Amino acid sequence: MSGNDLTGFTAFVTGGSSGMGFEMAKELLAHGATVTIGARAGSKLDNAQETLRREGYDVHAVHLDVRDEKSVDEAAKWFFDKFDHLDMLVNNAGLGYNADGMTFGEADPQFYDIPPSTFNAIVETNFTGVFLVSRAFVPVMVKQRRGRVVNVSTSTSTMERMGMIPYGPSKAAMEAMSRIQAQELKDLGVTVNVICPGGLTDTGMTDAIKTQLSELGSPMLGADILNEVILFLSSPQSDGLTGEKIVGAEFAEWLESKNISFSKGNVRG
Image (cartoon, rainbow, N blue to C red; front, side):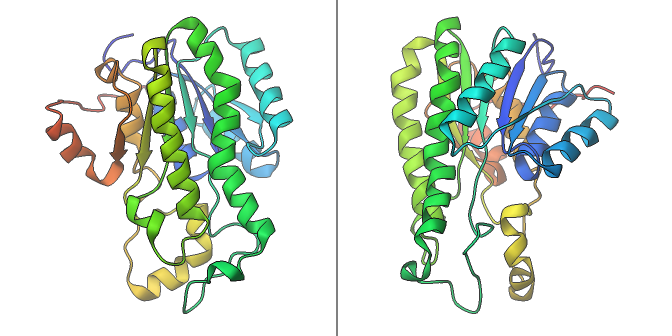
């Protein structure tokens, strides 16, 4: 593998049936990677796989509920029965205002208005889910002495902003866990980095509040905002890079601060 040619590179993307996960999976596929998207069973996952295959990509798909230990373990078994290695794990599955029980009106809900079942679903997806998926997939990376874990988060301001319980705190906990993972895996050949879009992003997570955001004149980032970041993290130029948080909307500035020259290059077609 050289440059942005990802032939032989395998990636597993959770929440890959839509939004940023779908776009990142497509970007990796476009550069030759072998990609599996994992998401809950249903038409969304089936349609995502069908769409990518119509575009000529040999994408794989597996049913996965990151909140369910059995589901995660079964998905990992399916993957490693099919593939002999894993180069990149992208923990992208997320839940926020799109969770059942969340509301958005003239004022953000108070924390005591949130049903406990909704609170738990968001925390279990955004925090516990990253643990369960990493627990199932990372040991193989450790055994092969190489691998890249990428955990998708949110802006730091979101973690402490009013009305963002439990979404913001769940992502803050996930980032803290990511920093510990980076330290524990640093000498074992596995890197762990956090990425986030850097603003409100046009995904299923914001569908419920798009009308209100439009009325407020709030700009939205495209779902492909992390494509260049994920391609960089899959490239040799990111070898050994760990414990970083990279913001998609500020990626050019981040590269400059690190004195790194990177371009996406040509996709296959």
